[in-house]
Length: 338
Image 1 (tube, helix red, strand yellow):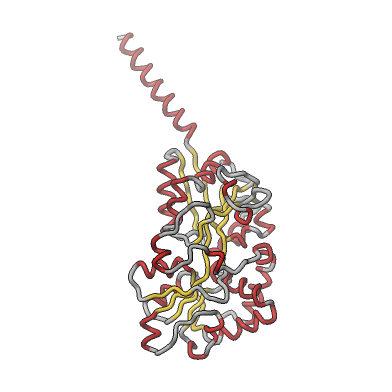
Image 2 (image 1 turned 60 degrees about the horizontal axis):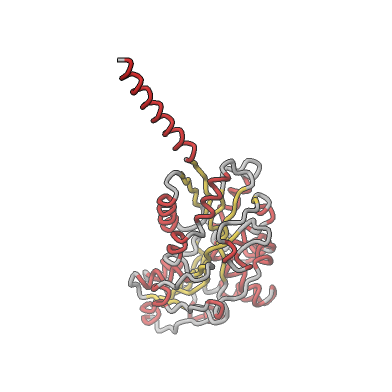
């Protein structure tokens, strides 16, 4: 009996030690993001396969709503990581002050524009402005396909154009910020007021205008390129138009929270976002991938997205865009917002 009892006790002790060892490596992190829900699901499922011991809790808010949440919690942050949030927002000094420098594994591959000099943030993906044009709706109304932002101010498109609200939508903000930078404040605001005359409504989401256009609710959705690519791939009568007078764009940045109590696991997750398993998924959801060597998706090719985006992107000054964001949005609300 004693012999059996000893073996049983030893076995139980061994199991307990194994459980404790597993628990010692397990961890939980909280991630705040503005990435779309379908891509979050895909990325997290892949991350779990590579890091099965890590529990990843994700809070997803729109670009415009995430900032107030983080700032409201600034004295007692509840997240460990900011993941895939508009760089313009991340560069807000109040946000950057909450981040801790961390050199992510593989970040040396990124160009200088895609990582902070002080290593507080890095960007692996981004999105750009594009028009989603319902070709059947335009044909029925005998309207030409618009090729430029200027074209959209033509009275023939009055009530046919939907655009995202820049206050709630990162896509909406990148569009007006790039227009103001390219035209200058005076001419830029005059242009936006002229454009407003043709806008049927401003939506909260950046992808919503494209969804409204592809179903024929409106003829033209001022949206983002990926929404157009996705609509074309799904068989909707949509043509993607990259405006010839400049397409604004935004990068999606990630960083480590200074107040994180789970920094080792948070760093593992951030490292993972530059891993092979992560980068192979990015073109499934993104028109802009900053990691060298990632091939263009078939959906991008089919929609006519140029392989060299530098030919169509307006060279946005993100520092200027971040610095002037509050002023621009306040002016937009006062003069245009509805």
